[in-house]
Length: 397
Ligand SMILES: Cc1cc2nc3c(=O)[nH]c(=O)nc-3n(C[C@H](O)[C@H](O)[C@H](O)COP(=O)(O)OP(=O)(O)OC[C@H]3O[C@@H](n4cnc5c(N)ncnc54)[C@H](O)[C@@H]3O)c2cc1C
Image (cartoon, protein in one colour):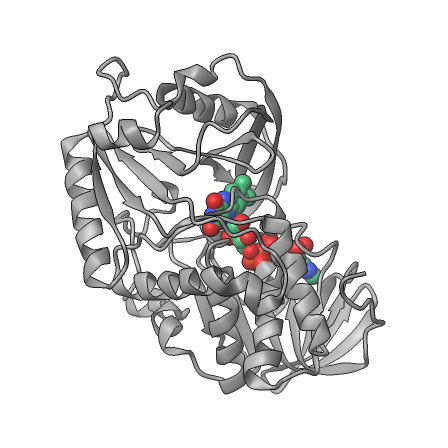
């Protein structure tokens, strides 16, 4: 085993609920950055079996609003050194992320986003249709598609990584620093005393905790309900699809702007694709055909040469969607309970920075500068982080 397989102790200084990338990264940085090593990560099934192991692994920091831009840029910087930091090859591949624009208003929006990125010290490039045709030769850059490509916003330092390796790497590095990674341990209840969580009721017995962090993504609402905390989060299914393996044809990540589809090619050669959420709340962790059809038709508008490629498999994960589309990394009204969630469909790229700032928030009982704007109170004060410009309309995120 790459990490120890300990029996749970009676109590810990900090217990993190959820052994996805975020929970494991938090435990690692608690030990590494803050010297807090009496820590457990409790995972109800196997580590990385949630969204961490189900996502399309796109990593980028092309955000509009300063608070998100600085947070995700710090994450991208951590990705660039992550394999060395945790001594585990997470196969980070800065192959670039290209967002295609198909209308003039979309082009203007991308100009605005690109300029904001440059002002924040983040790399951004506008590519013309001709440059895109050279950069991604298999894209249909002609006038034939229903929505011809006008150009695109490229972030070269973005890319992809191997999702499982991120969970395994953080688990091994955290375990080596003394963190107990405990699998098959579901938290079923949180017992409180004097506005503090004192005991976690788990399938492996009661476990005491000085501080508790929630990092359970799509199950955030369920765990928060254990302490009667109502959150501005809805859980929705997001699906991904992979084709049969092909020879190398695509060495970047491309997103379709006239619909919702993103495509990259895995190291095994599979075309990896994703699309929209299922727009009804659900905890069904599985795929279905209507969204697949929608995403694939968008992929074919971009890459008609994929039309005879066979689909290999598809699956779903449960997204924790916030009302403004930005994450919550925060203290809660319960004194020693901290919340990491609301990652919507973009939390994989946040993993290193999320762990970094959540560990800080737990260790200091106060937010880090990078997550000061991501507190729960923003939904009361109205200072929401609406990066997409969709307002408090969950179904547009
Ligand atoms: C199809 C798909 C595509 C995506 N594509 C991208 C992408 O390209 N780029 C990107 O940045 N993000 C993407 N995401 C989002 C990203 O995967 C998530 O935001 C991120 O992985 C969340 O990580 P996490 O550690 O918070 O959650 P998870 O990895 O889901 O970990 C949470 C863990 O908590 C455990 N848990 C739940 N309840 C309990 C309990 N009661 N007790 C103990 N354990 C519990 C779960 O079993 C799970 O392992 C995508 C997601 C999906 C599903």
